[in-house]
Image 1: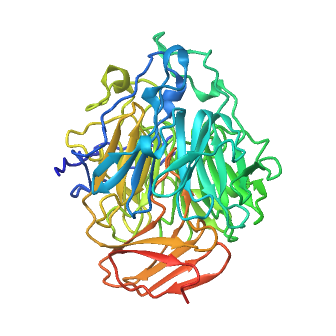
Image 2: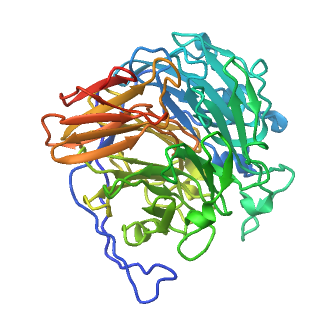
Length: 563
């Protein structure tokens, strides 16, 4: 297998002044070092450069779409790829052969087989976001697809064979769904569904740029939609509890969502990135009833009290203080934003002090992730970019005449160990510095070598598989597993002590943008040769310690088998 290319290194020779910060200037500090990622030149079984047709009238949803799912569809232990497709047919019909989603089974590192037909996952809806989760606790990962139109739920009958159970499950969600996630909000052991909803789109309204050319409409032209919360009844059906749970009545043009413990009380809350509206922080009372508290918690707007165009979300402990930071990607001229937990339930905007403002103000961010790319024991940041309005063509832009004016480079930021982020390099993976219109981002160990790899989904329908080649440290992947209920153990916190450092990762759901990645949690262990302690803090409040000492392995930690 050939391995292509190097990062194009960014040389920062200018000082950028961050708007609104009087008397302060900020200078990016790139770390010039060998590439961390290379694009895999030859991926067997996946037509990576296959594009989707565009009509040319700047149909707004085609500018926003581009998700993907990495999950083990057949239970063989490696990651398979579900590729979301989105295209209009003749006369504006949203269902067509060109837009059929595809499932690729991984048979070996970077070797895939298209099993769409045999799996029954060739859904032809106008796909936006999707997520995997075990809704019936049978050990197989099921799949929910959020569409522009009617959403779909597919049940995995084992070995990668799926059946559409949308109607039987009582799911009736239409309109514009975006990111979705499975999460047990009421602690009954069954995964519920949170569906982020974008806006009330009207395809009869058209937009133009300053030159009078057709252009994508801004979200401000449309009203936002209420998100939806569906309770898993434990019998294969779901009930819409949006109103009684407190979710209804708060439209917000949601695009990204993550499940995490925002207030430190042990139950799972929800954080939603809204496009041009204040973000939502849904605080759980422990029984699945929520109060929207973003403003009082410091999570609704940025440092200057401004709403931003929220797209993707990443959550993780950047500075190693035991509290998670939240990263939200935004539109050009807004910067991406880092919210730091200052105490349980209180956050502050630390974008500038953590070094993210100058390198992101000129880019439009979508998919994002906090992950230890170099396995040195701290979390780095990956963001993928793409404009929503035409500008001058970026050097190296790909996508032909239609998409070139929207293309931007993707970024990798390295953590210096204190939580501060430094732009390492741009143009993730491609030797020529090619830049595209990226949207979705999913992470997982695709080749079994222990470090996290990437899948990037682009607005033109192309997809990039990117291999991590820059991680030299020891590693550990952990699958927390409850053999009785909530088999995915979403909400659990895994804590590892190795090499004199304690790290914690939450078994999460959601994050990034329209995408879903590896359900296992990853730890970079640096030079550590053994693990001193590994604990799991389960969603029910109990904790267990497990006798794991060997590094460089994937471990399954079953509830009830620890001490």
